[in-house]
Length: 153
Image 1 (tube, rainbow, N blue to C red):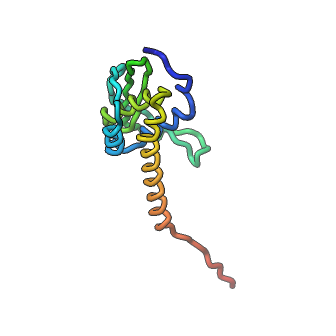
Image 2: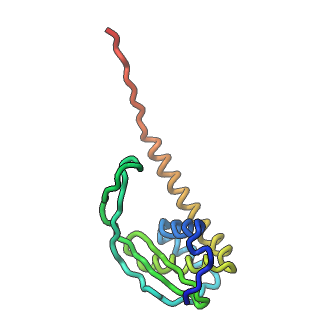
Image 3: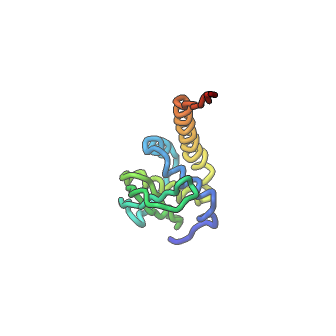
């Protein structure tokens, strides 16, 4: 069960894991349900809920400080081919973590990666980007420019 593809720590994997973690569950479930030929899998580590400490830095460069705790759910699955997949998502949605883990495992299989990329990962990435763009436009619309008028005596 322990075989992993060479890309198991690749930037590409970090990208799709991030996209799966940030996706809304409704979007992920909808795309997952439309994926043909879903594999069978075994739960290696059933979905479990826990807490992680979120850390920050002032201005992104200052000393680290503990911001607070955040709820996360994680899950690990194994495909029949022996590939392991892991899912980590914020919140308490066990099904989200399990689907993310199965998709992670599928993305590690060359023969399935392209199909999963086009039918699940790319659409989720596009939806996330659209959401960020909308939030940026809303924030920009409320931007206030301050200026000072100097008085001369």
